[in-house]
Structure formats: structure tokens, C-alpha cells
Length: 479
Image (tube, rainbow, N blue to C red):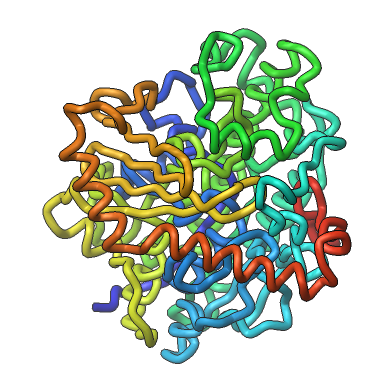
């Protein structure tokens, strides 16, 4: 059923679920604006990305459908408007729907369900990271000449911080104009912080002085051994092994959290503009991120795996008629946000989708046993990876490799793999049954490679395709 009022959806990039002041974490993160948003709404404690990398996660979010369903597997397969998504559903219902900021679709010309796109960031060249589609262990492209996180780590301004400032300016101006415009409306805002490059204005870095962070967890230098699939994925880029010294490694951690605070600052500006326009009482706000970041845990940076740091995301919903300062422990994903957007306006969309409206999840009794799912078939992965969360248990299936299984209640840091524990065989069978109810991992893996092989062939083969795509972050648009 529809709800009264407007809808503002803010999606950041690479914001780990625990990088919030109000989240239980061993790091004190300064996010007063997101904290106040949560104080007047509902925070989901267990929210996940449908895929821990930008382009597939955003395509799944756009359509409300799983990655293996839409077959947009990696950062070279951006959303082009098919299958139709929540934006199209709103347009069909006559709802004004616009975007400002990062989308990471193919281009602005495709009909992706927006009346207007302002300052859109899409995949570079309309093609994205084509070399990342070369994934087989004997043929993949490993970018070992350039550091993924950027040449410089420290205080300053980057094209990304400048882009976020411009997106925030345009959003504030849009909201000021919207006060006298056509209701109801849906505005999507895409911010890129805290995504690397790890460069942040000094004022935000000052919030995290040298020595303020706890020691790194599970670092290989302390004896931690990476899972073989994860180790192969990590070898595809220069990450932790590219740190100049321990001082730079700690600076990288400080800058990441400072970028979370920079993100929070921009969210605060947007919330203030909403209030100044007199729209706070008639607008529901949803905040989340496309995936998280490992921030050095396990010697990993970036994303592309299913540990909590990478796969879990923050999720906050606040607005008229919703509980205030509440927690919802029913697991959720970005696909549920898609259903919420449709539900908010009473809009419909053809097709079957696995998500549910967050409004319904909030109104019902909590269901910690609800199954949520994530998958990865992108750059660096020599085979498909799959994550299933059910209750306190998480199963990670790596096609062709031994699985991992964690009890997050007794082991929230995911330190003890229980997949081979004789006492856990019944639970393992239960989780695998739930996984196979969603997809056949071997069949999906083969399908992903088939599609990627066809993509590579369309570029003229491996030698040509391996040269297409930026090593680091997608450049923002100018203007």
C-alpha cells in the first residue's frame, strides 16, 4: 500500500556497516548526521549487498532482481534499462523521479527510469572494466603495476571529494526548488565517499588523530591465512602489499574513516536542506550503500568478498509514521529498498522479484531467520562466490574451493571456519539446501563465464579486451 509524501533515497559507495557512530564497533566513527537520521527512524542491523562490487550491485538495486537473474555479472556489464526497474514503475504511475550523482549504469542516454539525471557518474566510456571479465586463473589480468587505492594516501582534495560536494550542492538546490514543485516525488542521490582514492580534506582527517585506531584484525603478518579463493582474488591488484610502510597503512585506515565523516557531512547538508525547505515532515529518507570495504582487515582493502566488512551495509529508514530510534533485526538487502520505493508510491512492476518492502519488514514481527543472498562473479574471482545468511549463520560457497561457515552470534569477527566441524554438518546441510533453493552455483558459474567469454569475443579477444578499462576508480563527470 502507498504511503503519503515524498521519498529521498541516498546511496553512498563502499560504506561498511559498522562505520557508523551508532553501530557496535571497535572504532569510534564520527557520523552525527546519520546517527540523527537513525534516531528518528529505523536502522537495520543486518543489511547486505546483492554483490560486493559496484556495477552488479547497482544493477540489482535498479531492477530488484538478483545478479544471476539479470546476468549483469561484473563492472563491464552495466545496467542499460533492461529489465525495467523501480524507476520505470514510478514513471508508469506518474511519479516524478529524478537522480543526482553516481548511478554507475552505462550512460545517460539509456532509459533507466529517471525523468532527469543530474551530474550522473556512469561507467567509463560506457564499457567499464572489460579486462575484469577475464577471470580464469590461467588467463585473468592481474593489475600489479598500479596501486588500486591510488598513488597518494592522505589529506587533500580529490576529484571524488569535489564531485560529492557538487552533488550535494545540486541536491540542496533541488530540494529548495521542490518545496514549491509537483508532489509527490522520488529523488535518488548517489554519493561516492568513502570509496577510494584515500584522500580527504584535513578537517575530517583531524577527527582521527594518529594512534586512535585499534590494531588491525586478522592480518597475515600475525599468522592469519587467507582462504585460497580470497587469496587469489587479492592477488589481482596491488593492495596491502603496496603500502609503503606501517605508517601509510594506518594513514589509509584513518582516511577511510575520515571519508565516512566527509560523507556524513554531506548527508547532513542534504538533511538540513530538506528541513529548510519544509519537507522533513512529508518526506521519507532511506540511506544505504552499494557495499562495504575491508579497510585492512585480513590484509584486504576494497571489496569483492563476503566477510562482514565487505558484504554488510548500513541501512536506515526514517519518515512519517515509522518508529523512531528503533532497530530491525530482520536481515535485508538492497533488493528490499527497490520494493520499498515501489511500495511507497503504490507503483507496480512486472516480473517476480525476491525483495520485500522495508515497511512490511518493520511492521511485522522480527524474522532473524530470513534468508539473504549475495554473489560475486567479477574482477579477480577465478570462480563464482556465493553468500547465504540465515539466522546467526553465514555460508560462503566458493565454486571449486572449500566453503567457509561462520556463527556470527558467537563469532562476529568471522575468525573460526565451522564448515568442516562435525558438530555443524546438519547446519551446513540446511544452509546448502537454502542456497540451492535460490540457484545452482555450478550452473550459475558456467553461465557467468559463458556471458563473459562472449563479451571478450565482442572486443576482439583476450589481447584486445585486456587493455580496456581503468585500473582504479571511475572518473567523475565534469561540470
